[in-house]
Image (cartoon, rainbow, N blue to C red):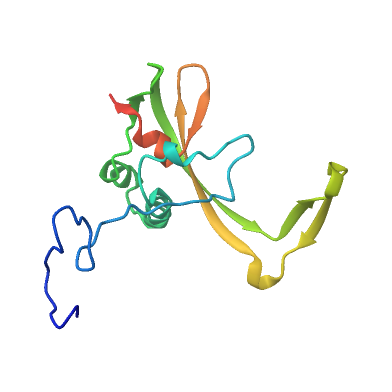
Length: 154
């Protein structure tokens, strides 16, 4: 309630989002602690919000699919595609990998080494990785779900 009334209204022109107006916000993943070696995370490169959740749902569904090829079609994973450089790609397989982190590294002051600490059970993390293996005519290429979604089918 606001000043004895509870309804949608504007408090003057140009008020924009007010107390009764919800401005939808895009979900943001502000950190990704488990990136592959050499990969640098730049938030402006993320084309789809919550892609990590979509990937997790894909992994769960794909693992139990009775017809994996139909599951891939339903998920719009192209069997033949073209990448941004114009290379023709053909899908060979989808790979999932279980990863469990049981220790951590911290650099020592001055950069002379590192400190290793095993993680207590409550801090151990479990996650799954998903990769699609495409052949480009010369070598196999491992692509993430986000990279596959950027391919042009055909």
